[in-house]
Image 1 (cartoon, rainbow, N blue to C red):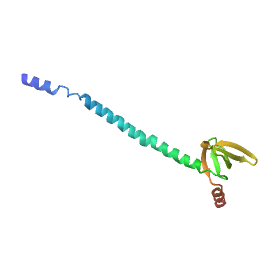
Image 2: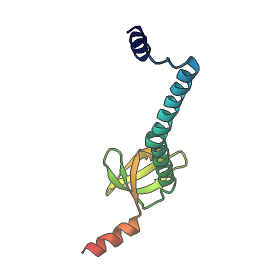
Image 3: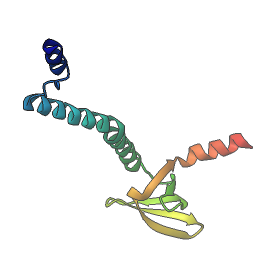
Image 4: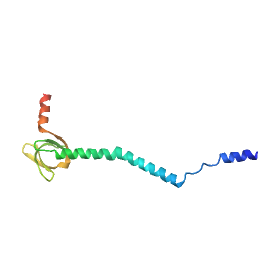
Amino acid sequence: MTLNFLADAVAAAPAALPSQDEQLYSSLFMFATIFVVFYFLIIRPQQKKYKTHLAMITSIKRNDSVVTAGGIVGKVTKVSENGDLLVEIAKGVEVTVKAQTILEVTDHKSKAVANDNNN
């Protein structure tokens, strides 16, 4: 009977706790995994989007049709060195727009071709 009691006591004893080194390595592994996931799901796509937007902005030229962040559609009449664009939004109405606020650029000639194909 005594032996059964001792056997039950040994079997019910808690498992050995992990050492502090094992806890440190598992914590570091967890944080590294979280960082990798955030990098591929959030940081990298934002960097790619920024690079394509920057390339689009630098390729803006005269007579391109643009859409601003405010939803204004117009035709570029002048491109300044400091990043400002002069955009004609109606006949005789021109506004100055920062190039960073441009959301979409369509070449004036390609837009005319697209309109001819629709008709």
